[in-house]
Image (cartoon, rainbow, N blue to C red; front, side, top):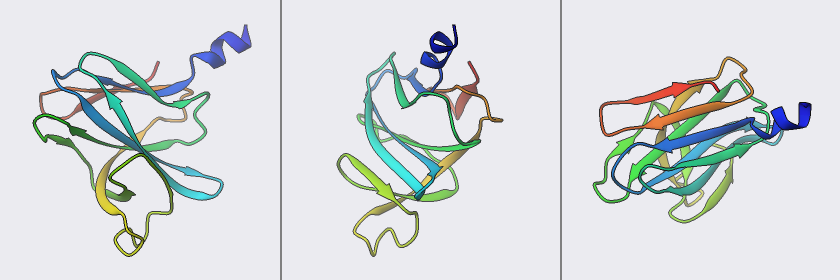
Length: 129
């Protein structure tokens, strides 16, 4: 029974737009701040960014609409790279050869799972599952 519950624990992003969206996630881990990307999430689908029980209370998300150039951003600066990446640390992004983007903070309230719904309208919806 417990194993079945654990299999559903995750951080997911669902793309409610008509276009492909590229997504990056940030979180705190033992080795420090981590940013990872890019997940390519086609229109009308969902992607699991972090599998298993969520270990942190706060997660950070940045996304770009591949076709129209729209962005889902926030005011927490973290590092991203042009291609697939996993970056440790959020300081000196430019000096280390990365770009810096504003990530949106999600307070999961220490829930085991979390889902963010990206949409064409202003903002995103978030929920715990």
